[in-house]
Structures are given as C-alpha cells and as structure tokens.
Amino acid sequence: MIKLFPRYLMSFILLVFLQVFILNNIQFSGYINPYIYILFIIALPFETPKWALLILAFILGLTIDLFSSTIGMHCSATVFIAFMRPYILKVISPRDGYESETLPQLKYYGVNWFIKYSTVLIFAHHFVLFYIEVFRFSNFFTTFVRVVLSSIFTIILVLISQYFYGKEVRR
Amino acid sequence: MRSLLNFLLRIHFLLLFILLEIFSFSLLVNKNNFHKAKVVNFSRQFAGNFYTKTAKLKQYLSLTEENQRLTEENNRLLNIIESTYKSDEIFFRSVNDTILNQRYRYTSARIINNSINKKYNFLTLSKGSEQGIAPEMAVVSEGDIVGVVKGVSNNYSTVISLLNLDLKISSKIKKNGYYGSLSWNGKGYKSAILSEIPLHADIQVGDTVMTSGFSSIFPEGILIGYISNFKEKGGSFYEIKVNLSTDFKSLDNVSVVGNLIQNEKLELEKETEKND
Image (cartoon, rainbow over all chains, first blue to last red):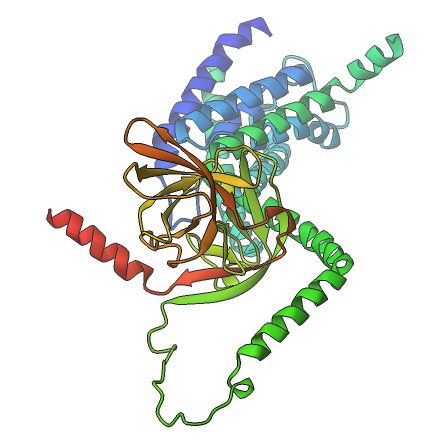
C-alpha cells in the first residue's frame, strides 16, 4: 500500500492537470465534455478502506471544482461513485475473487471486465454530474444525450489510458 | 451505548457518504448563484402554495366583516354615480378620457402572508409575473400605502412592507408641499419617521402626509398618515413622527400599481444626468 502512494499522488496531479487545462477546454458542439479525472477513483487499489475512498473522492471533486469554479458539483458526483464502487466491485467480481497484489486495471482482469466496471462508474458519475449541473428534470432527454455522449468519450479515453499504464508497468 | 457505537461503526461508510453529500450540496447551493436561485424559487413557489391555503381559510373566517365592508363600499359608490344626482340643466360637459392618458394601472391582489414584528418585514401576494406584476411596482390598500414589490415568481410576488428598515419613500406634507423622505424606525407597526423637512416649514400635529410622486414608483397623493408629533433635529430639519393610516395588522386585499410610463421617465432622467 505505502509504496503505491507516490504513484497515486502523481496520477492525481496528472489527471487534475489534464482535466483542468486540456479537457475542460474541449467542447464538441456543447454536447461532449469528457471527464477523465475519475480514472483516479476507478484505479484505486481494491484494499482501499471504504472511508478513505469517500474522502479521496471528495478531495478530488473539490480540486476540480475549485479550478472550474463550480463548487460542489463535481464533489457530489465523485463522492457518489466512490460510494457505489465497493458494491459494483462485489457484483462483477471474478469467480475466485480479486487476487492480492493486483489493481483494478485492464491488464489484470481483461478488457471485458474492465469495460463493464468503468462503464458503470463513468456513466453514474456523468449522470449525477450533468443533472446537478442543469438542476432540473425538464428537458430530461437533452441532458441524457449529453450524459451518454460524454460517457462514451470518457470511456474511450480511459481505455486508451489503460494501454499506456500497461506498457509502463511491464517495464 | 456500546451497541450504539458498534452500530455507528458498522454503518460508518453510509454515514460518511451522506455527510459528504450533504456538505457538497450545501456548497453547491450556497456558492453557485444559479443553483441558489433555483432553490429559492422552488421554496418560494412551495411556501406560496402553502400560504394560499391558509390564507383561504383565514378569509373564510372573516367573511362577515368582508361582506360588511363590501356593502359599505357599494353604498358609497351608489351614492356617487350619476343617476343619484339630478341631471337637469346640464347640456355640456367635458369628457375625461381616462384610457387615453392612463398613467397608472391597478391590479388587485390578495395578501397571503404578512409579518409586522420583524425589522425587515415582507408580504407575499397571490399574484405574480403571469398576472402582470413586476418588481418596483407600488402596493396600496384602499388608497393607503403598503409597500413596493421586490421579487416575483410565476404566481406569487414578495413585497417589501413599509415596515422594513430598508424602504425609504419620498413623501410630502399635503397642505404646503414640503417634501422629505419617510422610513420606518422599527418601533411598532403604527408609526414611521418623516425626515428632511426644513425648520421653516409650518407644520402642526394632525397634518396629512402623502406620497410626493417624485419617485417613479408611487403615484402622487397616496395617503401615508398624519403627523403625531415633531421635534427639531440636527439644527435645520424636523424629525416628524407620522401615525400610519394603514393598519398593517388587518391587511387583506391590496392593489398593485404599475406605472405605465415609468421607463420613459427614468430614461429621460438618466440621459439628462449623462449630459451634465
């Protein structure tokens, strides 16, 4: 656990940087806003205590909020998926459980498992985030289209990032 | 005690989640104007609905007095109309076309919430933007002053009561036209303070105070009250205590006064100031 700490700190900073300075400035026709920073929550080790999960998610959300001046919006969405994560992991766990010394990454449990896992979390996050942003349920479908499109885009980005991870660790 | 602790320990994940979410949402609502406005609007609409119900009930209870008042009003009006006068010897009369030069439009509304015991009192009316109410309109009750519309939602509006330390009204003394500014002093719902009347003005206890018509909100001549006493203050001005003619405790139906040419006046004044 301890030896993973610097690596996660680095990825935290990197992801926030990526999100705030690059992805937040990308908007395809106002419909697609990818939020790759939640990769941090997705990739936390299996053994992370549940409370730490929530706290870390809150800090992550707040950091993004502070940079994009939307205090409270990202926090509530990230805390929500941090709350969901243990249950999702339980539901989609392989037959003989998760092995120690592994991380929730593509190279340990395969493409199928990873896509299932990240899709649920990313979709949940985007769903909460976009509906909090508009703060109403009228125009439900316009928002829903935004949620779906942005989720797809984020999932693609997350998958690409997984291949980067793989190469680096193997070395 | 121990079992309680155990219980809390067991559900710490859920508890922490709920706590963090509540915290995030309070941040969200307090720091973002859009979300704040949404919540305030919702609660205004919600509370408004609730107040309508209670106001309906209250109105039902006061039907007798209301009827009495209506009958009196009817009698008064019947006495005024033409047919009760003899109409001999009048062959020519001037026609006063009220529509052509209409300046103020009156809309009646019902008060569904009212407070008089705070320092900043507000009223809630049962009509809103859909019925043509807009902020900055004047509110009067049978010719007596009540307040100024502050915010409107679709079907409700909030009114700054005269009994609000923030409200200042340009007013004048009826008999000689000296004008000053009237505001509430926060002491009791029956009186207010008129200031900025110079010492050389001739005033007496019992003089009528009414709106001046200088502000673009109130029409001229809305009754405010009667002077109850006055004293010198600051060397060159009177401080005048005015007994309000409006009984804020028994308000029920009011009229909202829209100034149809308010913008024209404001724009002209603005332009003049700019040219200076």
